[in-house]
Image 1 (cartoon, rainbow, N blue to C red):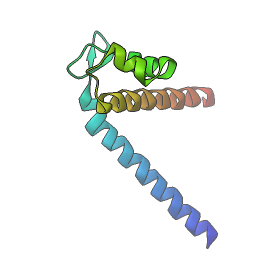
Image 2 (cartoon, one colour; image 1 turned 90 degrees about the vertical axis):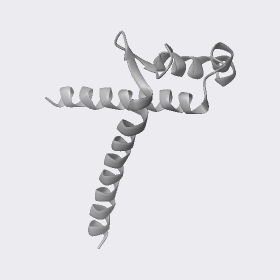
Image 3 (cartoon, rainbow, N blue to C red; image 1 turned 30 degrees about the vertical axis):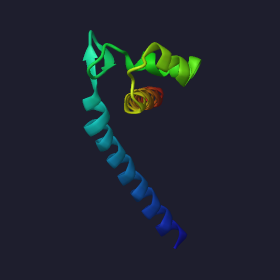
Length: 99
């Protein structure tokens, strides 16, 4: 019984991961565009990595001092984008180690 529940839970987790990836593609990727091969928030020249760097190192107040027109949605988009790219990089690194 426990093994069956674990299998169902794992399957549900995989489905949720796929749904999250789909939602990411449908929302975050539409809000980010590439400019000179750098991911920027749509409608700006602000790099998503710069947003996350400022947020991480200097805090929200400093980020909004630099970019007062950023919305919470912009910040969330940048954070999700960078998180997703980091996860993909780590997965690829693990695959290369396994080869």
